[in-house]
Amino acid sequence: MINLGDLDGRFEFFAVVTPDGKIPTVEEDSTLNEPSVWYTSPIGTIAHLSDFALVFTDREDASDELEKFRGQLPLGTRIRSFSVVVEEFDESLDDSDEAES
Image: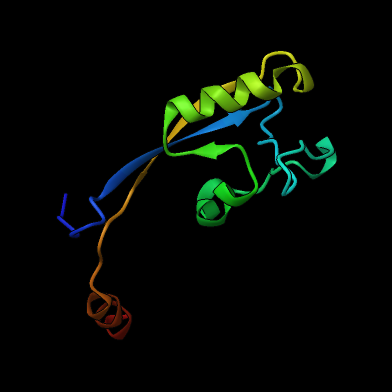
């Protein structure tokens, strides 16, 4: 893996996920939102999720929030671990590939 400086190439995050694949979201005052607005989009947009969804970089934080809301979440809601691999690519290679086509 290429060393990208402060971005180390791979990182993990933890999300509270319902059995049907939704990530619960919270209001600004930490009140759980109505299930119809829980997060269901692709995980690839993780940058903004930690502002309103039960997504964390630390497993203990995820566990704490799961316990806090457990009584309001569907049976079988768990913490799932996700990992992301960051790869650097050279745009000039993409340009030359297109030129050859």
